Length: 454
Image (spheres, rainbow, N blue to C red):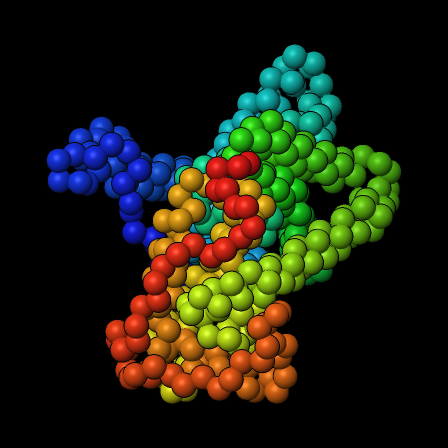
């Protein structure tokens, strides 16, 4: 799924004689330095975690664990990407999140958990008690903080890509998927080594039991825990920039809930012979169902926001009459992309997907503005998004018109009557020409809108 292209950079600070932003920035403030440092950190973490896991499982165990642990990853990542289809975030955020979970967070967890468990065992002279305490108290705290760090980094440094609950769920879920991937390699590889020593084979082996519990029964466990943190960050993203207490307490509350659920899950084996299955059936499965419903409901609400906010741009000439309703339907979006691919190839389909993403971002921006939660750069961002839409109109509009026609029925804009037939501009699928006049820009009207009110 294509995403809305990056916005051009606009100066926000003092300007020099040529009208541009001051160019004398410290070397550590340059983007390539930050990207390079982060990539180096993740690469080094990956090498260290690879060496640690291989040392503990052996080469053969590592390869077996890797082959089994990778099985649920495509399904989980595809599920989170599906949730994000209304306003898809860039792939680089997902790649960073997965890499952080699989490398940095996993390394932090292994080192911190091992140190804490050894310290408890030394202090109490009871290794078995130390293992239990480490699994139920230390591990949930360390692991959830390590995974939450990825969500925090995206929230702080990719703020334009982090606008609501779904974004928090997706970033948190993909991070936890990466973490579970590395952890499963370790557990499955160790189980395979145990079977090699004992000579067990088949469905009664430790490897088979570990695979059933971790990959078949509970591949969603780690994502489920960390999604609670993501929801906290997502609600904080919907808060006004001046609501500092709310923006701090909500993520912390989500993190504490994630730790609590994680601790309950890890401690379920100490609740008796059937404690694990009792916690799984009575708590984990209902929690998974509830959170799934919440995320899908949030996605439907996002589509409703698109349908409600975009008609303002239809009135001012930026959108055709049927576009708000086509853009507010996932079915119509898919039909539009398919139509564009048939008539203009992959380039046209990608342009339509980018058009849909930019239009969705525009609707969410206007929605935040109406609720008094837009930033000071509201007008600049609105202009940027409108420009991106206008560049792709000749490809996207005929495709969206076709999608609406194929649906056979769609409601007229509230208060504006049913639209008449629309004729595509100029060259159709020939490209992004300038064959149509550019509408005079003015911000979409709201009653008593003040972008600085929080």
